[in-house]
Amino acid sequence: MAHASSLTRSRRRSAWIFLIPMLVILAAVAGWPLLRTFYFGFTDANLSDLSTYKFIGIENFYAVYDGEAYGLLTDPEWWQAVWNTLFFSVISVSLETALGMVVALVLNQNFRGRGLVRAAVLIPWAIPTIVSARMWNWMLHDQFGIINDMLMKLGILSAPIAWTASPDWARSAVILVDVWKTTPFMALLILAALQMLPGDCYEAARVDGIHPVRVFFKVTLPLIKPAVMVAVIFRALDALRVFDVIYVLTPNNPQTTTMSVYARQQLVDFQEVGYGSAASTLLFVVIAFCIMAYIMVGRVRLDEGGH
Image (cartoon, rainbow, N blue to C red; front, side, top):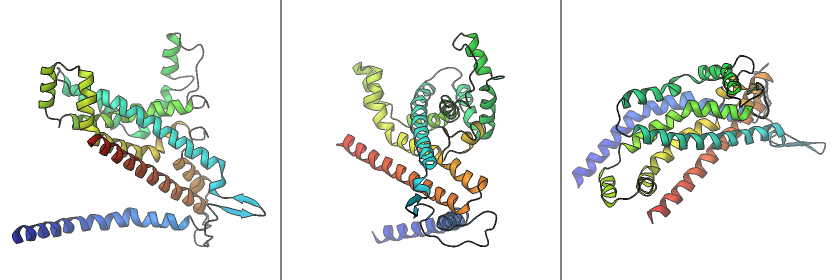
């Protein structure tokens, strides 16, 4: 026992020796800028002159002057950006998870050319987001886009639609592009979980004559649920802080402005470093709250399933 305890302590020391350089670099690269952003959120800093600014407390978040409320929490554009972000995240992540599950189940089967299909499926994910967003921007163009041309030839549309400029279709267009781009990522993670499953359960189900759909919901889905939860968390983190695809496709559309786009507008376009930092701070809080809530709900469901 003493030898085992000594070996455990030695392994822990070795682990910390390897982790400390990474933690120091992470603190310098991510921790310090994050703390500075939090601090600037409580100042009146302006990009035109960052040498002179003063601490103003929570006035960037909420303040009352002459009986009228000001600040981020009273800004309807901010709350519209919050709603846009949550709507985009829920719809896109849900679609990507469902489609990724279907793609992973197909790629998990044995068929000729499976390796080539797997490589082809990953192409949208491998393309840089800016490039794919610009590509889709041309495809969705109301005058030159191939999407309008195809739909008009099929008789679905009678006139071209400005997908990324229309207040009715811009949000759907952004979600479409994001789903096309990120579904392979979800499929890859789910496929990795599927290939780790034991084959004994499926052999027994096949011998008993259980329908494949029932096997999926009773055997496959419960076994891969932890992996799916991790995949959803990673994808939700990206979706909640989405910026590039929104900024390229719909740069000034209030129907698709997300929290990251709003913070960028305040920081760069309006040069309000304090106000933009306050928006970035609230973005961090919203993301942390959503992820923690998802993890807590997921744990409860897993415990109930275990019981």
